Amino acid sequence: MLLPLLLLPLLWAVSLAEVEGYQLSVQESVTVQEGLCVFVPCNFTYPRYNTTDLTSAQGTWFWRGANKVQGAAVATNKRGRKVQEETQGRFYLLGNPQSYNCSLDIRDARKSDDGKYFFRVERGQGRSWTYISNWLSVHVTGLTHMPHILIAGTLESGLPRNVTCSVPWACKRGTPPIFSWTSVALISLGPRTYLSSVITLTPRPQDHGTNLTCQVKFPAACVTVETTIQLNVTCAPQNPNIGVCLGDSSGRKEPPVHVTLTEGGFLPG
Figure 1 (cartoon, one colour):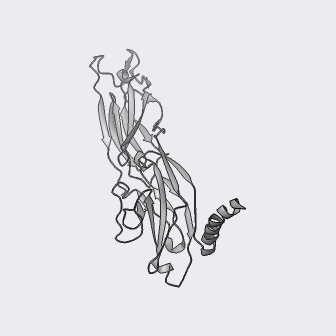
Figure 2 (tube, rainbow, N blue to C red):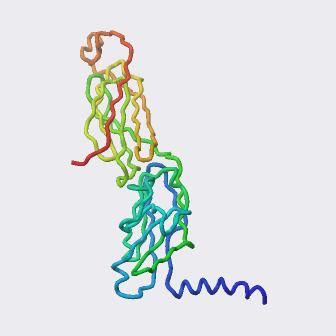
Figure 3 (tube, one colour):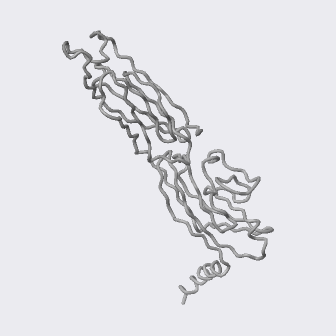
């Protein structure tokens, strides 16, 4: 009979939590790549002792090891609560604790975000509960996605073409990425969207086989990725009788000069 007696306090504690209605539903683990975002659905229950509980609900997410009373939060809707500088502007309590929703949104993920987190709710006068039995583990991995480069049509010498670099896998909720283009060809910046950049490229015969690189930096996460392609330039005859290509500069060979154009964060109009 010794074993049942040892288990009795544990069973009593679990039963008490269920009776009192302290429940939190959140996935145990989420994985996100550096610079990207992840939304974590979360719901909880908490006993309503009076009708004022709903109007005074305040929720807070903490990093494991933080002081739940005086420590800095990673995300909260409580006025006056100190928030860690490392997560400020990147971690958001999107759920409304008044509706028993504790959903967390993580943006511009950093390697330093890797760890465990817990949720705490405060309601009414002096009533609070910390859900220390329901940890949320966040795993941040390296960014493996690469930019996509798309050329509109065939590259013909002397004829301008639009080239688009996009990161459709990135997060619009995060900080806008910074695009940089590098090439020896003649390029100029075109229109910009939140997750893409366009250049106008006017190729010359000597640009055939040279590289065009699009580099994308996610500034809030300090991570950079890039894609490089080789230009395949065909000859658009200017004078077919003598075989001169449009855009050819009298056959003179000059040392290639790499030009880098950088387009900063996107500001919607």
